[in-house]
Image 1 (cartoon, rainbow, N blue to C red):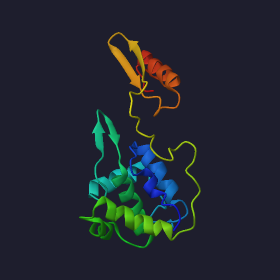
Image 2 (cartoon, helix red, strand yellow):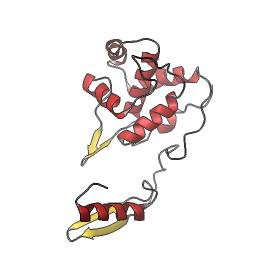
Image 3 (cartoon, rainbow, N blue to C red):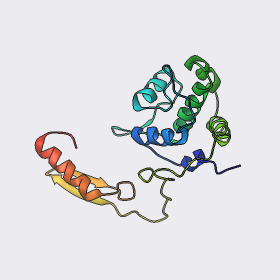
Image 4 (cartoon, rainbow, N blue to C red):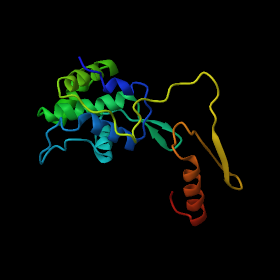
Length: 176
């Protein structure tokens, strides 16, 4: 059996855009799209699946939604089942009460029967960064009096550029 690409993300913590990118990559070319069903999820679709109870709601870290492996497995399984002709009501029934391992195993088995996939695109994490046993070096900057930001450079590729965008947005009252 080929490498289980879904399992690469077992310890992942993804934002919504990353969840969509990873699911899209894993499903690329494997779910037939038609007028009823898109071949891959988008952010709006993931939110809709959440409203139906097909995908669990994310964990919130302040205002940031954090999606875990379970939600990724649910999205991938949902799209694979839709590609086989299941309605969303049938998908709901099929996934209801299933453990994360059961959902992931079924999705992984379905993906394994499909042609081999390339490695993830460079802008996606191939796997979450390994947990370090010691303290991490964080990048902290005061943007304005009383407003500071701390950035984890293991999760943000260019902390300085992000600080510049945040400072500019703060100065103009816009969004970064």
